[in-house]
Image (cartoon, rainbow, N blue to C red; front, side, top):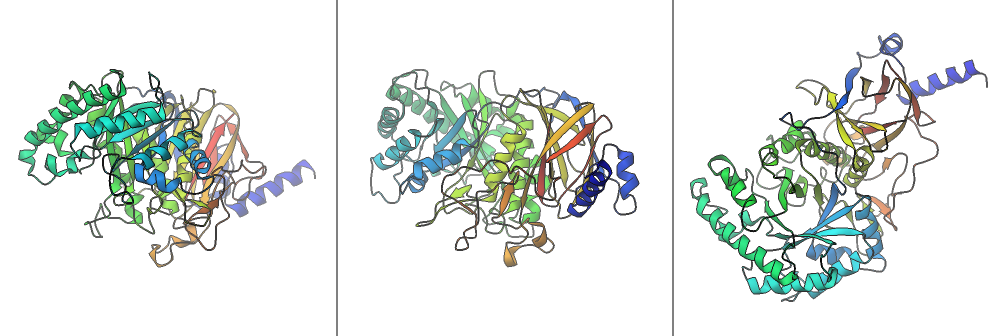
Length: 544
């Protein structure tokens, strides 16, 4: 085929697939002025992004930025059956291959799992031990304060250290986290008026310091790191408003916590009926308040973290109470998770752990009895984050930084990696495709970019899918592809997810499928990159 014929064929394919490739804004407008509005323009600057709400330069993305958060009892549930440890290890490790940090917490080990009538927690510890035998990860281990027994704390820590990493300096144990949402524990006043919060926080702080000393003594390591306060109450009244000074009291306390941990959920699944700005609905999850707004609440605390300490969101997900069917288990959750993780990085958080358990609507992956493992849409979004913002990459300044009211719900993020490559991620949370122009000094004058698309098959959700969303794939609960690859195919008996027997995503397809160009590459010129991003999708450009 001659050069002219090839050019004509490529143009026809691009138009049919809905992808517009152009080297200049003039070319974009000349071919599409009558058919569509002017493209959305995003400028990629050749300078680092600054922290959300301040002029502070952001540090590079650390190793192990994204991880999973699994409760002790749920580790045992995930680990049931032959080969379960290897599949779970593959799924957890892929979230941050450069350095996985797994948080194991929740109701335990002080409170035994429902299947066990009493202590000790040997089944849970054994499951953790078997998992870490095949998972190259560091762990943050929870010590629940509900039992309020130092003897029990010492016993559990001794057993965990002996099983996981018995030799000092216990490099595989990142920290012991003391308390799981202690602000919701009756002992510390979850229902007292705000003006009575002070005494309850003081009581908690005293006991936290005692538990930290007990942990270090039991571990026979005076330098064992501890984490907290892992607060879960909306508004964090212990450390906000008139009690904002309490955060520094905690940071500077005698326990000297290394990890300063928070729990964050975008929406409330219980006691908040729709319509309401915070109620569990798909449009609410896709709003800026669920991503940028979620991250902005952390900025007062980020600025108070001393050097050598780490602020980490060690439990988060879309909707409280295990999530909401038809929202938390859909493609919408994948786009939310991808965007919210970037927003938390821009806010200055040094890591996030997404909460998961097999029966949750917001599960990253599940293990139905007698069936293959299932991978859910949100997990794909987190995999794409690692590709868009690999360890040691830096966020670049992008304008506009977020959509304004009345504008299309499209965002762009950019990073410059340690490998010298620039990556641009576009997230389209709208139910229509949008044309874009990417330009600016952060893009090279000449070169090419490879493309990876995160998209789901149309359909899913049934009557739960909002009007207009069905044909976009936003409500899909399976059939998700990342760079043309999927854990699938979907199990028709279990449509809520993509089945896997290995926990490994196949490598990208050698040939891209529509709507991307067949070669998976586009040209990069000084005048910009023009492209159309499908509805309910995310598109990653890796500039070479």
